[in-house]
Image 1 (tube, helix red, strand yellow):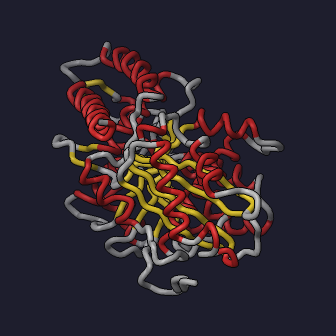
Image 2 (tube, helix red, strand yellow):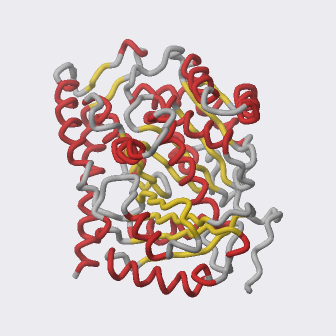
Image 3 (cartoon, rainbow, N blue to C red):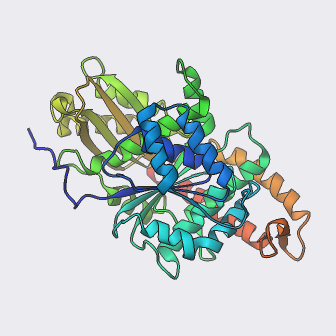
Length: 432
């Protein structure tokens, strides 16, 4: 049996969680309080432009946790939160305000807190945001761009995995307006439309909500959704530490997708499969039926597979790396057009009899949800432009220097349209 990689080496990639806004703060705080992962350790930072929202996040999470986890939340309250900007009551659910607030305090506050996480070049960050609001949606794309391309080059060389949550379809049009702008700015930023996040991980509230509604005894709708997201985060990090000689680490997620120019993905999970009753092939099918974002899985152009098993089953039977590769190859040939694939087996120390599967499907067509939000984006954008003067949509209630130009809005829209057109070209090439 192949030996497992050691687990106490400083050579491993370090990860951190940076969450901005109320919804993202819930995800990060829940992860930190309920899951222990040495890849993260205590590297977590909750950002917000409203003090009340930070308190609300931690109070709500505490209601669902035991005493031990609640004590961990107290550490977050004392040491892992940071207010920024000048709007003590928040951003009014407008992404441009959130971006401006981050710009105001980036050099003096945010940069220092990020550098204080102690990451080295090549380490990775989960930058978490919900796309419907203003604080995270405005600040995270800006922060990523500044960290990678800004004049100070804070955290230069770090890799950014932007995990963004799409608003529910029943939410108001302005939240879908924010979502379209947020996704575009995560993918491409600035006048030259350069790549921003190294990978954009898409999660949809409506899609996960349907899955939660099928579960029994859910304690809270959004709490259960956030638990699923936290489990996906944990599995994405898993292969860099406890695995066979087939490692999936940070660069394996980002290098080729960036070169191809298609770098979005969504998790699909199948959890707690009985090792004696459930085949890997069945678990793969189950995972594919539980995507986190609406999609036609056949259009996925790339895929990563992470199989996590109890240590006593590690690299044995159907969980031996070659057997996994064989099952994975057959599944791909039957289900997706993707030519770029990675797979690995990782393990947990717990004495259980179940295994988990994560499929990370990437480069798929965005025609199952984004066009619906585009319609709402266009309608709300037209309303904003009715009050534009000299090409500027004024937001003077948030400060004299806060405005959104119609030119910038047109560029944001075109960047996303160009990205989606490129996806279509890649899918067509692979389909022929």
